[in-house]
Length: 254
Image (cartoon, rainbow, N blue to C red):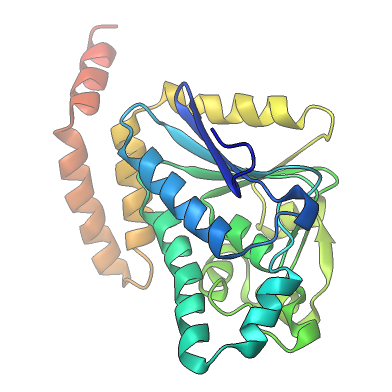
């Protein structure tokens, strides 16, 4: 593994670890990091033994958004170039939802702008107590546009409006209170708590988790009746999986 690569990737047992590796730039997003994330996610998705993916940042911060070089690139690019650049980030957010296993953001330090967007795009967000979250884009006339589709599904409309229009940072505790974060752990035991949390996915059916994740996101925008019918379809499929057949057999033989 190249320790100087912008994204580090390793599989340890049933967990794929993806680390943003620009600590001197607070792991700011750029083309190399976005491409590295996509490659790592696709590789992990193809590994049958992987039950969860963890995304973290090297150094003190998770991800601070775009760096000065990326902002300069935006200011000097044409409309079509900026469209392609934005599309690439949107593709990353979509990929996270299409990967079959849970994608967990393990956030230490700051997760701001595109970094907060990356965390929000993950299926689960675990945060250290001292972590900070925010969308400061409006302070430079920018808009957290792509992630808004996900943020709107994570928190209430009024909370989303407040986050994207005031540009303020919030604490991990506040982020948990409004539904942006699943759990907050102490700074001292954070890595151990993340490891323990993720290990729980080894104890449940991989097939059931995959079907549940797919169905949950597939329901976005559906009517109530259509959602129920999709549930009927997935319920029927789940009954035919080997995991379900074995699970029923174990239950009946108790």
